[in-house]
Image (cartoon, rainbow, N blue to C red; front, side, top):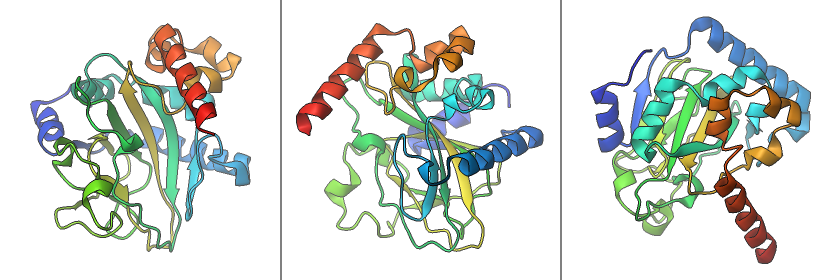
Length: 260
């Protein structure tokens, strides 16, 4: 893919998401699949523990620290341009994780906005990118979304009696492996049940505005050897040299300790 189109920007504005089919070349898609499966095998029962583990799914977290291949995902120019269309130019990575819906599962994610976030006086501040490592189909746990709800100014749990239940306006975002979905993360969305015999895997590159705390404080998670090899552009996307980001992280850590 080369360049961002008016149609993609219009989809983000009106629907809350845009779908980029065949974004990953075949060889790179295969490399990501292999690297993810290798990491699952390496981490075993600990997989995802840096962030969270979830029933009937496999998770991986802190992916920037788990191979140079994953550094490409977070600083892809066309993807960053679309994220910037949602958040403005002052953005940073919040987290890079992997989520795989297990075969024969009945677990349906409730409709939610990422981080329980509502737009503030400056506008939108969370945006997600979903990198399809497997086909998303009607049967294998594809993402569901309610178009336009990023503009509602409400969280689904404030409005819906049962956020797990089907929504009359929801759509299922189906697409072939190699597709990337860029989504305003204030949009109501959630994963569906995988009723097939194969896992359904995707990477999630999650971004936020620079004046907000990261979901996972990258500077503390990345090993020194990882940080040492990063390019200036990738370091900026990770906010590794940003004093404001360090201060935001300290504030979150202090508040978390107080709440405990």
